[in-house]
Length: 300
Image 1 (cartoon, rainbow, N blue to C red):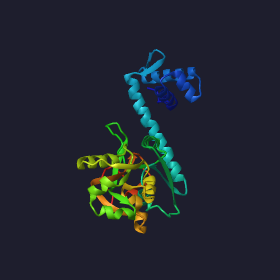
Image 2: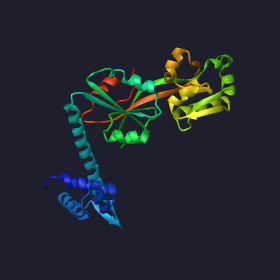
Image 3: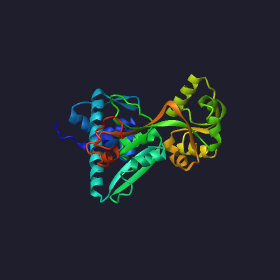
Image 4: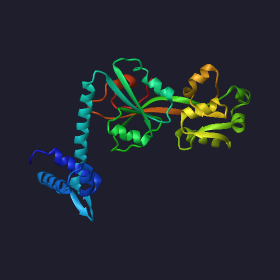
């Protein structure tokens, strides 16, 4: 067998992703005939057909699926090699962090504490949705994802999930709510308007299950998917917020807000999600507390 031509392999991979020669040629900005010719050359080198035609579309054969799996691994290793030596070549080390847009800023600052103020380190922070940040993680444009949502995983998933911390969740409100809180949790939940995370969050699901067990129908003053907005609504005394105290630690310390009740069996768990890399970013070991081998477990 001839030596594998990586250019041919790259064209094959693009065609497999696009589904047609026309779309692959457009994406690669080369002629359709050039794509077709070089894929045929790759098939000749491998000794197997990689596609079968169904109407206008090209569908991978069994050999094609195997070849695509190897192609993905080859080009992932190539991307890792380039990313690693770009980082090594710089005078300052860079850690690229993606954080769920709704995640507590105070938790993020705790995570970054080992790197804050270091002249030799640059921290790049990106926020976004879980799907967009997982794509960025796979593309190696970020080194780690901070989230309170465990990504769906199966045997083929690349994600390594590490449990970092678990924080209690409380009812937090202004001084004006203290007298009512003294009458008990049930009285507070059935009387005051509540500021809640939105229904699609894990925190809201746990809270809804708790009040259903208690037989309580809440009065909802506001819902928000952003912890910073929940904090601001609580500060404005729009109601009592269901929120981890870490989010409002400054307001609690200043006496602007009060922790009225810690909710039983309700907590928020924070995770670091990475992917296995041949050359992991060494700064990850500093913020995760040990060499990152992808294992689970809680950090101190």
